[in-house]
Image (cartoon, rainbow, N blue to C red; front, top):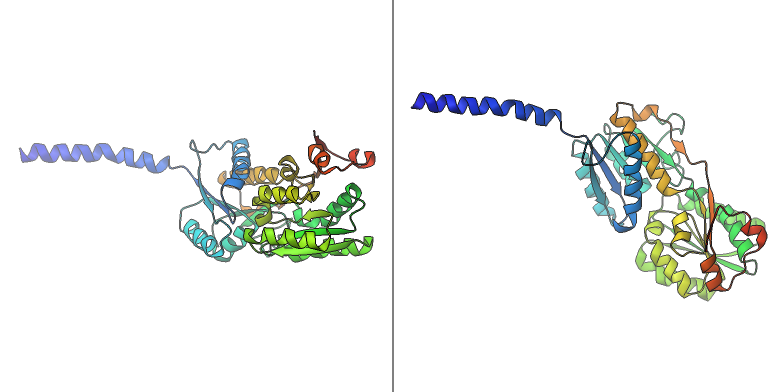
Length: 325
């Protein structure tokens, strides 16, 4: 009886060995997706990432896993989430600029892909765009480098705005460069500005009170994760105070802002997904040059201009890439 029991146990164990081996062999690679912001406003970026992965043959839940983490604009939470992801067996991590800086400080082996609106060299993420080196590469969509162009477009749309408000985020690593670019352009044009830097979403209401008291007749919205993920609230505040505004991303105009000028942040995350797929296939981050957005879109929301009582000059309308009616 004991001999039969032993043989049965041995046979059961032997039968389980191939299953365990097959489970290890078919374990899907995992990607970390870390955003310094909140979850809800970032879902279109997660979708874009998955689209890029799919172009490389990777489908979430079928042959790749994605670990999503959102820091809700809290520094301590971001540090904890970065530590958690780095402790996991991840094949690659995709992050926004703030999160990428946090990850890079601790990561030495896990490939890191950033999606940045600023200068990744100045931010210390890579040493060169063409030869990033190390284990970091990514995509740049130049959100912080187009402030002067946005100011020009806004002045053409609202030529009687003697004072223009500028909303920037102190949490953005590129805030000084962006603000300097806008202020230099304003000085050259003789344009007066009221610049307000915010550190959190609880400061938005006060910022708009400052704009109104200064006599601002139009508003330029800066870049950065804090402002991007709170886009809906900023658009609502601009509408409440009847301030025509220009936004750094297409989604700003699509969601009800007056206009936007910049590269597509969603497409940047799609390209990040493509790079993630290439790394999963065996390429090294150091060998992948930082991709740069080459297409910039000027989007105008005519519904908003009509609500604000603004007549857009035909010469400006002719420059648009997309008009929302």
